[in-house]
Image (cartoon, rainbow, N blue to C red):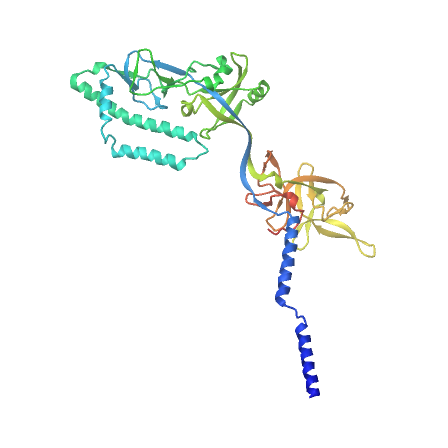
Length: 474
């Protein structure tokens, strides 16, 4: 019995030792490993600048200055010699020839009464006429942009012109109906354009303005008043009926500092971009002193007058120093030093017949031998006959041999190149650029250069984030 008790006690002791023995749990080990990896990855990410690519595309940059000027045209005010109700037959902004019918004056008011009566009819527009109006509305809605609200005024003006065209048909029918009833044709006066020009139905008092008579007071838009003329209104003899712009040559006047104005005059011609529609035109520059002694820039045009015949104040940009090429961000641009080696010391060699130089080297026993060293060319100065070679392959003091000659050249001179890091091959590969124009954000560089960039190349967006020949993992 005693031996059995001892055996039982031994088994119990062994059980407790087995129970208290700690075993490794593979799940806990994996969890700890993953947790440590995440901590290391997060810490490394906070210390590493992300290398972002930028796709090179064609673009343009220009120095633009925005102005608001006054349009000066050869304008003729046409007045009426009769009193009565007026009706127009030409859309505003349309060119008319001398002798074209522009308006009629109804002295009795019978035509106005007739038009008022027919306007009460429910179906006064045909399907074709309604379709034309719907098309204009649909076109406006398709191209509408909240940032370009000026198109709303263009749409309004276009709709008014379309309605006027439809009204003209009714007016002519009304005239025929009235004159056919009792022969009162002489009570409706027909009036024709006295000259060729562009019709506008507004008066603002600036019609007689000339470059020499301009003053700063004319630019005070708080005092500017414009009188719009409408059909079917009662007029008196002597009232202005319409304005006729008779010359395609016109000008825009804008105040300017005299020194800057002289610089623009020296250019003779400048490119002008109109804000309202993005239209571009070349203007001849001039400078005048107005009636108040202030200096004004005069921009003379010989086209596009009809487009802006309705506008007195015009917003525009002077497009100066415009350049077109490859557009890249300034953050991608970097300066890097290179060794300068005369072109006669460059040769080809190696298994792949690559560019390189023949360099003097030493064996372990001190004997001299020459070796071909492959090196990438980063630029070539044709005027001096020199190549820009990589500083990571050659060293200061290296002695180079001229091919097929005993002449030598000691590597000693360095020069800087402006460029970017191309990342098409998966590593930071320096490429020289030739900057044509640059502003605060972007640069325009010359395309298709021998050692430069091409459109659709990928470059490092932030050049400070990499070093030369660094492998890039994005």
